[in-house]
Length: 443
Image 1 (tube, helix red, strand yellow):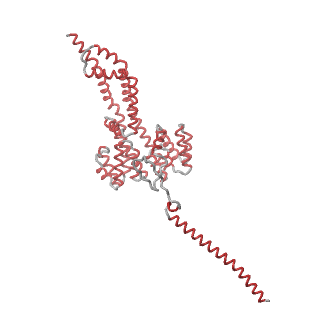
Image 2 (cartoon, rainbow, N blue to C red):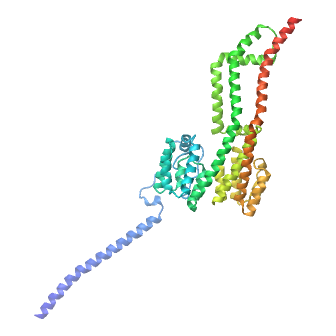
Image 3 (cartoon, rainbow, N blue to C red):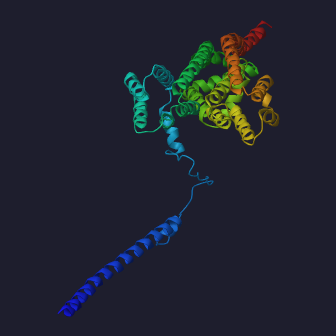
């Protein structure tokens, strides 16, 4: 009996061991399959994106191409532009005429943050304070972007209202923890720029009024007075001098096409102003403006002062020299100085010093005087470049302010000579044939 029991127990143990072996085999298969899956996933991760897909990548057919040149694709380190250049242009057009609002915004932000108010509370307070709808919308978008975790400088950059110089200072302030101080510095510089621009506007009020009145008077003479005098001159049947024939020709244009000619002249001035601002024609217009006595020296002094303020302020805030020069190039609107800053940036990027760069750029002394160049070189060698540039800015800001105050005195004789020459030409053209006829009658 015990032997039978042992045999039955042995059979039961074998039956129990068999499913155990099957379970172990299944577990081993599962482990092997999991390992294979892990290896395949690693291999897929190491493969390029196009090889992962089982289906072959089909090239998109290009029916036609309107591109003139291929643009270089930016790498992963560059931020991708969210708007095209055309979109930026229309966004900047929407923000035209908001310079005062921008200055007020930065000054208020500097005041509140220096008082200890947090950034989000500052933006919400400014949004409630501003009355301009466009400014309120911009502040609302900036506040929403900052609340979502976007840095302030990027939100300001996406608003297309602030200059690259202002965005760069805000960015350095955020990264270094000195945002309030940088905003205060920006507010001070904007006050100086506003004071200088207001002086220039005040100086240009008198010449502008005189030129506008002269234009109106000439139009009135051509439309109403000269046609009657021309009839008298034509009835004399005498030989007319060249000036008289020129005045008759212009008067006939006014009398025949006056309703078209006068609005066309006004529209021409507007088109000329737009071309000078948005097209390459601004090279010619800026060259002409810089040749006018008084205005040219004022423009040069103000541009050199801006060179010192922007470059010195960015370097003092901790921006690298190449980035500071790039921001200076972006902010500058005068074509000759913009090209000069671009070439200077290329030399500095290659490792040249300011002395080598100034010597390599042809006619650099016409844009930056030799004294300014020597000060910049000395500041670079002594390690006080930012302080030297800010001192240059102070000097040339004072020169620009003095030139702006003397501008009416400089322009007044030129305007009087121009008006006197115009009136004298018209009077000579009318009186000369009358005197000739009277002299013939006396003979």
